[in-house]
Length: 173
Image (cartoon, rainbow, N blue to C red; front, side):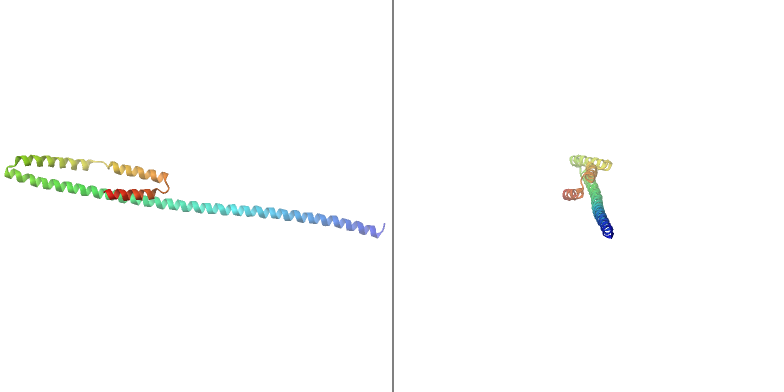
């Protein structure tokens, strides 16, 4: 045994060490790839979560804008209904005033039949005024409130339907 065998033994041990180093390198490379893949998946999931949060925020803002629009439209409709009611009351009072004046004319001229007819009309107008003044908010107004609340709770696009409904109602008033 000589130097040749020692050299051969040394070279064989180098081959074993080299294979061990290559195996370790491959294991590290596979591990690094796995870590990189995990990190890429994590980043993709985070980005997806951020996009989802952004989309939810936009939907929330849109719903809030629709609700504000709906509330504004409801307020405008209520104001319009109140104006219409005041105009109606003004017209009733005007008619009553006119009938009272006209009623006095036949008395002076001796027309009792006309006086009685006008008296009936005057009493009817007074009753109508009293009923209108003592009336609680109209059933129609209450229905609008309930319908508006249901639309806002159930339908995300309720404001569009309410806008259409208000246009239709406005055409009748």
